[in-house]
Structure formats: structure tokens, C-alpha cells
Image 1 (tube, rainbow, N blue to C red):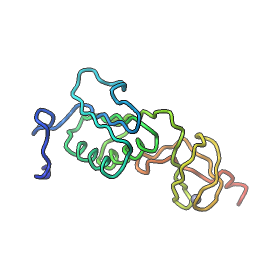
Image 2: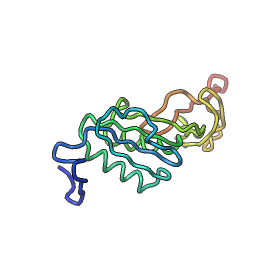
Image 3: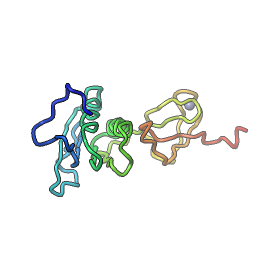
Image 4: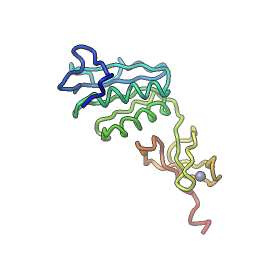
Length: 161
Ligand SMILES: [Zn+2]
């Protein structure tokens, strides 16, 4: 059942839903350069950044889509991670979402100790101080799509004990 206020573009959605590719680009990224267009239906979005309006439009598109839709997110990591969190919240699984970072090195790290999300340019595997509790965190390669962040754990837990 769909909300009555939602009007779908002719030929894009219907009672059978949309089963193609939803391509979303942020900032200067151009989704048309993304791979994955093998002739299937696709729905392109472009936003300056992952603001509330952009994310709610994406949410609507995903909610109207059927099982089998694939979402490709292109742009700065912070934006595509925010969009990936929306996709996960809509029930899409990891295999249904492709993240194409535009090369910006900014990433969000979620502190496992005080639950503060800190943005950093440090690469996975390096250490930095959490903005919330000042614990020196090691950035794990575990990316949580639910939190839209990498998980950070105390880098020297064994020494502090
Ligand atoms: Zn912390």
C-alpha cells in the first residue's frame, strides 16, 4: 500500500513497482559515468549534498520500488554514507546498494565507547582521538551501514587495563 499523496511518473512506477536501478549522485559526482547500466530501467537523482530533502526523496523512491531494485550512490563519502543509511533503513541489504566514493578521504568514525560520530580524514587502520571521550581510537575496516560510519575501538585498550 502506497501513501495516496505520492504520484508516480508515468512508466516509471506502477502497480508492479520499480525494479531497475536507482542512481543517486551528490556534489560534483556524475552518476551517468557510473557502471551498471545494462539497459535496465533506471531512475537518476542528483543532489548537491545529502540534506534532509534529498534523503527524503531517496527514501520515497526506495519505498516505491520493488524487491530487486539496486541503488548506486556516487559522491563524497559523508553523503553516500548518509544515503546508504537511508537505504538500509528502508530494508535494502548490502548487496542491493553500491557505494562509489568520489575520492574525498573524509570518513565518519563511530566511537564504540561513547557513541560519538567523528569525521576524520585518517585512513582505515590509523588512530585518532575521539571528539567525544578523547579515547585514542583505531579505525576498523568494519563499516556499519546502519550507522553510516566506520567503527572505532580503543587503540590501546589492553595497555590501559
Ligand atoms: Zn568516544
